[in-house]
Figure 1 (tube, helix red, strand yellow):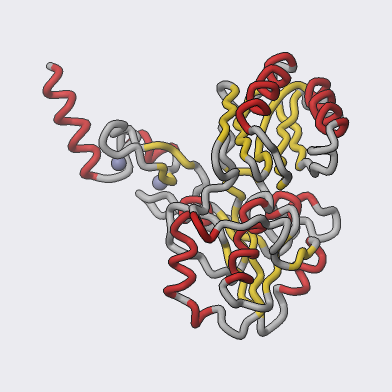
Figure 2 (cartoon, rainbow, N blue to C red; figure 1 turned 120 degrees about the vertical axis):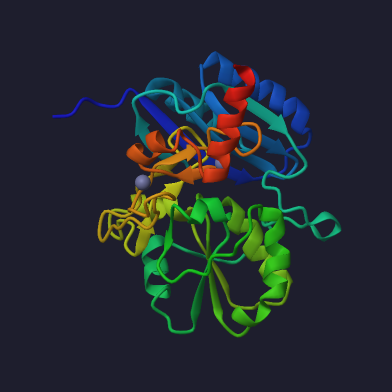
Length: 303
Ligand SMILES: [Zn+2]
Ligand SMILES: [Zn+2]
């Protein structure tokens, strides 16, 4: 028998009305500090969005406190067992938006307008609909590590650029059944609402995102290729235990590889790229010949 993991990672969000995000943030920081939780939490007037790591016991206490507060009683958690913290520290911020879509005057609440929710089993069925288009609403560096088979993968590196990309590519979506997905579901709550408001009338979202889809005992992540990118030290987590595959490749030797590292040319590049261990060594941790040269010239300067 394997030893039980002593830590957990909680991924969660809820859209709800938080009157004063700054006050909420300060009180929430005290709570998290008292429970020695690490992670990243964003609080806004529209709700709360977080990923935290902590001991199993403290995570349970945290979820209980959240449950006792009517504002956050309905939060659904995606829980991963871990051997330790997956964040170096705790960060809690108050922001205008809990996901940065940057709609400005066009902003709205997904509690009023959002796409139809599909549970994992329904999603798997819907993907087989010949009139369906599967839309990945994440950034390019996320879907490069993994995505649903046949998904449309917008080449954007910020969520804020997605609305314009959709407008520029309307013909791909018009008259289609749009199936949108993201990591844990929060971005799609907003984005499918945005699509509805932009005149698309058949819009659905994967409830709980890729993470819940991977945890569903029946679908087991079926037809998701590669891993799911996450915003903590793990970088990628497995999704598919039914028909898994590796889609990412080492930028140097092109072999299948899911090792994401940051370019050793820290100040000018720092680009996150896939590299196998032996290529990392050969290329001194750099992403390209150009970066190797820069690093070499910097070394010369210090001699
Ligand atoms: Zn390689
Ligand atoms: Zn580089």
